[in-house]
Structures are given as C-alpha cells and as structure tokens.
Length: 245
Length: 302
Image (cartoon, one colour):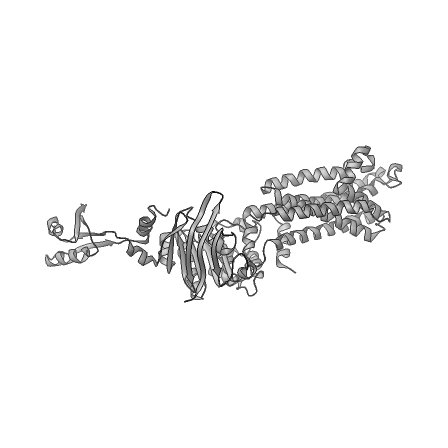
C-alpha cells in the first residue's frame, strides 16, 4: 500500500489527531449504547411511521462519524500541514501535495467505513435493530453523504487561514449540520419550516436517505441529487481555492 | 564542466516589492555554489524559483536542462531540497520520515545509513516534535538527500546548529559533493561559505554584486595588511615608520601593530632581521570574505 496513506494512518492514531479519531468512532458508539439501554427508545413510535426511536437514531449516528471525520478532523490536519510548511515541502518531492489530499481522504473514508460497519453490527447484535435491507441504496447514499461532507471539509481546509480557525469553522459546521440531521430533535419532530431547511442541508438529505435504505427503499432522487450537488459545488470550490502555503 | 543550473535575468516581485531584480548565474556540475547575502537580499526567493516553488516574473531558469515550472514532476526526482521554514508533523518519527520520503523516489538512499552519517540513529523512533533544533535541521538535510538527488539546494544549512554540529554538517556536505552531487548553498555564514564553497555569489538587494571563488573575492578587496608582533628587544618605532610600505605604527600593550600595503610584511621582517630583532607572537590579518562582503554590500552579513 501507498507509504503516504500508511503514514497518515499512523499519525491519525497519535498525538492530537488521535482525539479526533477517538471522538469520531467512540461518541456514536457510546450514544448507541446509551440509546439502546433506554427502554422507551425500543418501542415503535407512530410519528416515525412505526419505527423505534433507536431505529431513527442509527442513521444519525452513522453520519455523526462521517461528519466529525470530514468536517473537523480532516480540515484541522490539512491546515496544520500547510501551517507547518509540510505541504510546501511535499511540493518539492515527486509525491506532490495532491497525494496528501488523496491520503487524507483515503484514511478518513476508511475509518468512516469501519465505524459505520461496527455501528451497524452493534445495533443489530446488541439492540436488535434491523440490518438495512437495501444494501446498495445504503452504500450509494453513504458514499454520496461522505463525498458531500469531505468536499465541504476540503473547502474549510482551503479557506481557513490557520489550523485553529479550520478546527473552529469545522466544529461550528459540524454542530449546525448535526442539528439538521436530527441529532437533538429528529427531523420528523421538527416544525415544518425547519424540516424543509433540513432537507436542503447535506445531512438533512443524508439521514432520510439512509433511513429509506434501512426500510428497504432506494433513497429518493432529490436526496441523492442534493448530496451530489454539495459534493460537486464544494469539491470544485476547494480545488480552485486550495492553497499549499 | 557542464552547467547544471542556469539562471538568466531572473526577476521576481511581490506586489510592489522587488525581491529579485536581475540575477544571472551558472552552477557547474559537481561544485558547491554559495549564495551569500544579508537577510531580505533575495537569496531564498532565488532558490525557490530554482526549486519550482515560485514562478519567476521574468527570466529563464534551467536545472539539468529542465524548466522548474513546466517540468516540475521530472525535476523533483533529481533535485533534493532543504527549505528554510518547513516542519514535519510533530508525531512523525525520524525513521518513518526517512522511510516516507524515500518512498517518493525511484531509487532512494538507505535511510539507516543516512541516520548514521547524520548522528540520528539513536533518534530513529523519536517523534519529530521532540527533536532539538539541531536534530530537526539534520533530519531536514537527510530528507533532502534521501532521494539520491543529482542537485541539492540547501537553504540555511547550519542555522540553529551548535559549532560542533556545524562542522560535522560541513564534513557531510563535502562527502555528498564527493559523490558527485552538485550543491547550491544559501547561507549568511562567512565561515561556511569560505570553507565549503567553490564559488560564491554575493547577493544584495536583489542583485548579484560579485561572483567568484571566496579567495578571489577577498583578494579583490583592497584592504591594508595588519601586522602585530611582540619584539624580542625594545624597538624604536621610527625604524619601521621609515619604510615606504608602512602607513602606521602603533602600540598595543607591549605589542607593536603595523599597518601597510600587501608588501609591508616582507619589509618589516627584513628590517627586524637586519637589526636582530625577533618578532614574537607574529599575527598577520588579511582581507577575508567578510571584508569582501562589507566592501561589496556596505554592511555586515549578520
């Protein structure tokens, strides 16, 4: 495997970055265990179309991991590397700094995939949450959600003047998007206006898309197009604006 | 000797500030070429244009026949670089850094051997963030050499090193040159340029003010010779003052200090010999590269 990806993996498990890794994988898992232990979370709720509260939360916890990795961990790492002059140093080697972006995406995506699999397994085995029935739909929806979030993360890394601000902007976006993903108030419980706004955000599109997949349906085109749109728009903007030094 | 680096009429400005006015020079194969100048003279900008990190506003640069902008990918394979301000991620270990950078090149040097030569072997498992300034500097030199480059551009090679580490690094650089690597050295240490460089370009305010061997540069400066000695028996100053080569005779304690033209030493010694006086603790000060620097730029390099 590519040495740069291996090295970035090791660095992600060390020092300050390890906190990001621990939070991304640990917090959703912890929430899963807590929610799973609440008896009322396991009874069907009419408002959720017969799903249990835990059912509703599983996709939210999946995007939690994705969002923390893409919006906070990745921009902070890339902005730090730029601040150190590390990206500039890479520019003078045959590897080039673009491969560092690739390595970052690879590492964060790999961690996200493993976290999602572990979360789904724990939900299924520990708390009897049904395994998603539309696997292809889940994968397509999940990858598009990851693409949208990582494009936004790259955009944050591109425009943030320093590592501290990258971390700050990433964290604000994370909380904002997780709100619209329904972390504090599930989307069906939101007032109509907030529901509409929510569906227009990347995670407000991602969570119902993953929910559909859980129920054995394909995500709607609108959900997929919304996520793809964010991925394309922020991906292009990041590519145009990214500074190596 | 064939030209490895050719810089012609390089011009680079940042906004209204001209960093490099009009710089031209040629670096030959196998030589150590020094770029010497005060801070802000345009040294770093010049080498960053050679490295392809900055695009010149005007002028032509060719490194091993490659254009640093157009042929970047190819150039990075044969050019080793030490940047003035660049750090690695703190948690990265020394051994890992060498392994990683080695993996970028088609035929890398042995990382363990490089660590050995640079005295980093004991630090192989130490995170970069825990290294001292000197150790970090040595690691950056190792990383510049790990790709077995044909040309190495080293910016502020020994800044931050203690005198012993500095001498060790000079030995290392001479060893690298013996392996046929052409080296461009940016420095503001006179001693370093005098010791290592075959030729030196003095840069001031974005222009090359002189380019020659360190010895030739020093010779071009017309400074007086200063001779200091302790006479074995009391000496009448007039004996020396009467010599046409001597311009002044002063006393410093019981030492005599004579200044004069480059022929003064011969004249003084002859007169003393004729009068059977021995010049004890004789010291002769001649123009150094530092004097040359002062003469050409009108200021001290530091």
